[in-house]
Image (cartoon, rainbow, N blue to C red; front, side, top):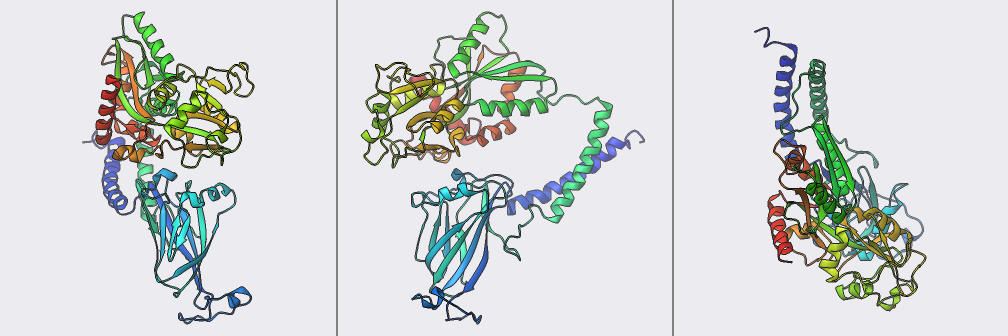
Length: 521
């Protein structure tokens, strides 16, 4: 009995009880009020400025407020839209099918004018309020663009209305993936609602105290077994630079969960990584402690290379912000550009700037490049490399400047730096990059949601493979890491980087279909 009533057992039981109760409460709370991604809105002002004061509140006017026509029943509304959740909201998190992200409806009133303001340090938000992004109004309906908001960011809309009185209904319609759009309330204009309620904070404190105390006892005893399926040793993750951010996060997660695992990420291009794995495997009796990630299927014929489906990856063409073709480019335009037939952007459209076309490409080991050639160009890039720095041309026999770089990051940096430059990249790394503009292809934008729903003809995407040489032993770190990638934590990391995991219900069918296409091709 005394052994059972040890300090760690008492704390463990208390933690379990508190955890069960807290979990039940939080499950109910999360179902009612999702906290991952939350977009709130508040009406901070709804005041009359006309003389027809049906609300009973008199006002005094001077200047245009008194002189402008049709303003007898005018009102001013200040609407604040804010990210009050725990995660950032990207433009592709809005779930509507229209160009704009949200719709504000002012019942019984007509919109006369709108002014947008934002706090200091967030001037970039204003770039999204354009007609091309869907910003506009008609009658009593205001269309709000898909504005990306970091946690805590907000913008305000000052709306001039007529035809109704203060207090008429105001609501915002729209949805956020893995979250919600909801009304907020506050006494003062800039009050911010707490992220967690008092009860939630109390539960968090109690759980933290219990867990930290129990952890201290366990660490002091130093007899904790490693987590299930963890293995020790060294492992190298190589290959795709487009998939590198995912691998770096997975490396950190695994090493945090599994003490004794030493994992390194050495991304050098899909083909280079697979070739290195094949070379090591042919020289060793056992499966090397290497996993090679490839954008698309391997390009070498080696029956010992074993493919594991990981995710569907979306890619995109990017141009320098100085070039913004309306509606993107057609596949025929893209092929003409990469054959060297278009040397200046104005040759495509007289509305485009008269800038020289600069092709910023990846090296021959790049899976991103191979997928671009296979899925979009239906050929190789015809123009050879004519420049080492993407600016000065070493080979003047070709009219187009083209350079080859080692990584996705280098391509994005160069395209953002050079007016007239065009390149290609994995989608999530190109999203929200300053100085870049993502291009639609044949009118279709790269969209993870559209891909998952089977509602897109966008061509530039493919299957991410993880290759091993032969079958690694069940007790190896290689096999453990592959199993870890199929688990919930890894799937969340992969999805968070804008890929479609192959282990989800939807992703499994899409990945299988793409794999059949790769085998047939």
